[in-house]
Image (cartoon, rainbow, N blue to C red; front, side, top):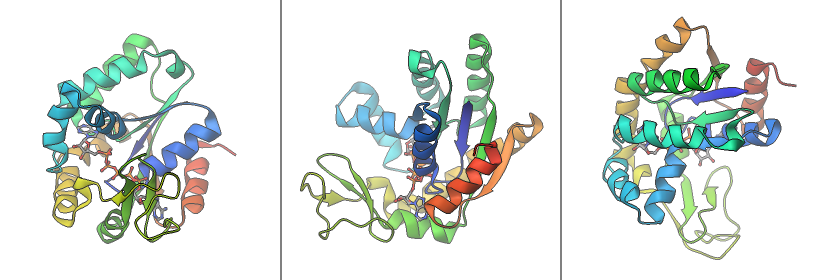
Length: 215
Ligand code: AP5
């Protein structure tokens, strides 16, 4: 299956994409994760992207489209993929359409997770990441055993720079202005499936599976 998981920051795209990856045996492709990894490695891409990410702004379309084109050409994407956090603008959606047309492999579905702003702010404010190994926690739903210390490696847990309250607000603003219009783009193509993203992770996954017709 070739899927897009769509939704505002903190809607649970990454969480649900990982579950689909396991269930369907297809790779999760998160542009946010690719950019954060490039940043960790100190590459030119990572340095450039960091300036946008820390402000809650979008990285330029041409940079994103190039990295997605490269990733989709890899052999593990032959039998499908779950795109997470991409596309985020109309030019990105058009670019993706072009790339997939060239490959002769159109999208099957765009699953849109809907979550109100106040739930998003609550979820993102509670997210912590291990500064050493990158393991993710959530102080409300998936806390570490010891306060602010990674269960896996003992590293210190930190907040993503873009999970600060003022940056969350900016990410939501950018989402409404630049990303939400993609709803009409995919509805016109008959690919849109709206799913309520509020509730426990398994509850939401049940709704995602039903929207995709997966048992
Ligand atoms: P990115 O990493 O894609 O961030 P995002 O879309 O803002 O996504 P998040 O990871 O914050 O949220 P999510 O929806 O994946 O939710 P998650 O499952 O993690 O992008 C970061 C930045 O990179 C962008 O701002 C931009 O600068 C740049 N970028 C990336 N892609 C780009 C693109 N295509 N174009 C341009 N720029 C781009 O969950 C969030 C939290 O909620 C977690 O703590 C989780 O445990 C918790 N949670 C999840 N589900 C539930 C649930 N059901 N109940 C309770 N808690 C839950």
